[in-house]
Figure 1: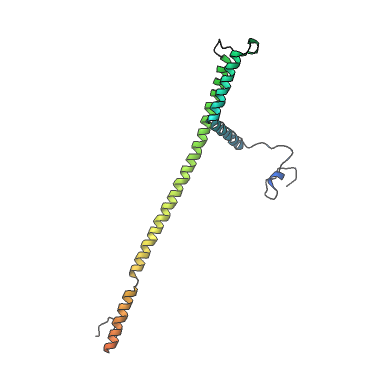
Figure 2: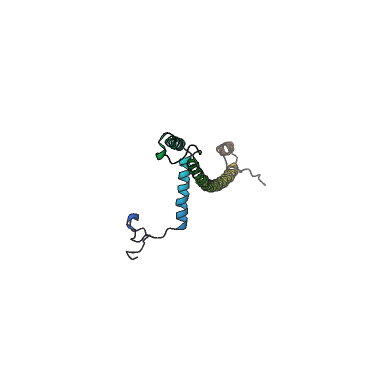
Length: 175
């Protein structure tokens, strides 16, 4: 590949694969970046520090527009702090959709996690059933196998037959 082009190969460190002209961003990457931003906003708005900061902001706004001289005021307490109401409404109108977007992304992640858990549970069940069948097959095979006690009893019977002087017939009757 030429040096001036974007090189995505693995033979160079990632930091060295940049070009002078910035490349166009992938729309999926941009949407993911926006999604991460919405999650950051939703997390930040759900903290006590955000509530404390917003309260301090509102109190400072009201004190500024109430206690300072008229020339320095920019929002009228007599009119019910219209600008403050507008700012808080604007903040709320952007906060609600951002929080919903963050929740949708979390729902998507949860859905994927649930599907992976379901597949893992199916594999575990299949493995367990296979192992159960194998254990049953081993039990059946062991049941047909001669045990030490059975072999000892047979050997004792043969020894007794030999001690009596009778030929061993291995359980077969003479004709």
